[in-house]
Length: 530
Image (cartoon, rainbow, N blue to C red; front, top):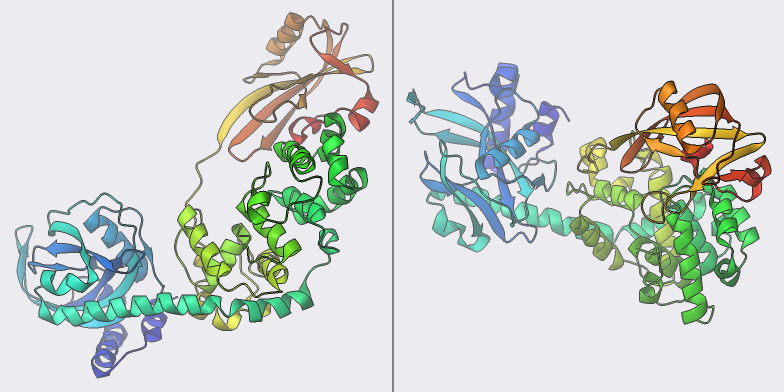
């Protein structure tokens, strides 16, 4: 939102606030962006009331000029992004790193007199601050640090005690006003949760995609689909889901499946531990629950490979229990509707949203409510681009849509850069046979088939020498192919040498072409070289 729009969006409460808003807008009209610089007698500043998540304590600084505890803040210094500047000032003056706005909105516009003072040896004459005040949230358990040129102390102060700490009587009403507005924003958010079922459920029933796992509410079917959909696109899962259930139509059939057949059916889906955990869970259901899928949330959660999201999905969709299924899609939807700037990657944010959703689950419609939020995140409230707000059933009360902050949300800390590993892969052929071997039983792609490979990027000469060391008697290096494969936390950069050999050393398994069709499941990282 542009600066003028941001200022105009502020809704004054009373004549004093209206006068302040008019003065600041007039200053912007007359001075333009010069109002953001310190060169004028009156100029733009930003400040923030920083509170803990419970909204009962404030983080305040003891200001050297005012000799009182006050809110952190500073000069705009040329930037039109007043909110980001306020957050920057909070971090600089208090030393905390985790702080986020309770809303994108300005919570107070004020014209404040700044007395004359000395800073860095220079005389600063009296002047006026056109101040935009924001509300921010910060966890209390953070190391505090004083900025000595401006402040002498940084402390958390109980909201009810600020009158004892703030000796500037004219500022107390301002702080109390913003505290009240922050609490009202939080109360408004809680009320918005209650609007979600009536808005989303009818929309879902009219617009839901036809997906094979939505044809019934059999918990075995829903469970298989939810495990497959972890880290995998819907379109990719469809054919796997149908083929998997054809092969293993019941939980008993899955429990008894041979590992080779199971892995072959999973080939290409990735994250192969999911398939192993499916079978472990199937065996547990057969042994501990007499082959009947458990209906209790805690029992479902006890199954190998089942986390809170999957347990919530099965419990609500299949058994009509008020158990939210909160994943990245749902976190994004809720963060935008509530205009919540807390990092969605934190356990606290997920727990907060889960509890709030659980409190509004409608009896008898739990499954549809769960799936409506999933569907909204998958088809309308999209990531990495403009959400389709015109199609959203929650648009009329979505705070991000109202304030134009859809693309600023959700907030998620940047992931660490993936570790890059260089590998040299060998596609060794002896007649019609191709060499494969098993990976170790732990770690990435544990226990799966692979082509022989070694760490590092070998030259052609080094690759030939490696083949000789294995006893493969290389006859012809047919070609070299470079490919990349990305896992969640690591990236493989691979050079694959296709080498025709005269011998088939016994440390490898030598597979016929048909084996790759029916028996040997190769992870995509290696299969791409066939």
